[in-house]
Length: 259
Image (tube, rainbow, N blue to C red; front, side):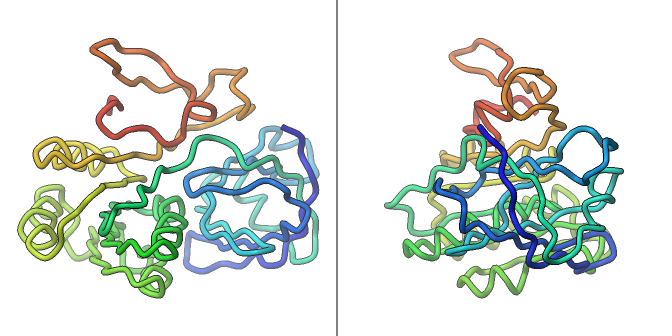
């Protein structure tokens, strides 16, 4: 996978901890699937040396959007990128979500910046006529991202936060089982952003025999499968094996991942 230069059309702060970036992709000649990511050089300096993986937030005809959490040195440097600057990117990379054409309603469970990965799936679902029900979980109301964006694609959005004392696993389980399942027949479950909510999604999917997928978030080095920095464990046919999130993932069948 070769890198190429993309023009940054927008890079602005949208909350205390999150930024929204839009890049020009007119030079991109590869289709982009929800769940895939781009590996981005954070600055022209040697530090930080490693690129940072950003999941695709929204796909447009000639642009791609990212929603990212400014947390460490790399994303801090990324937040300083100005409009009309060019950045060095690699992608699209990885295995994306599988959206069944026959699915009528799907459930998305996102914690924090995990919504940045699931939002593109909601967009794709909308365009094929699949309805989305979304649970957004965050620390605070300010960190509840993309609710209006998702509603714009016809999604029913439920929000839970630590700030309001509504984000505990048992509370979310009750929301799914006693409210969402009473209103909707869920065909598939997708999750990203929280191991505790992902374990809940696994439990619910197994109990109610609903297929699902998870997008894993791991630190990456090369994003080409060579460095094995992003290895995670899955279980297939009773055998535990290690997989590279950048190559075999980041999306995996929910039932296979060991959390």
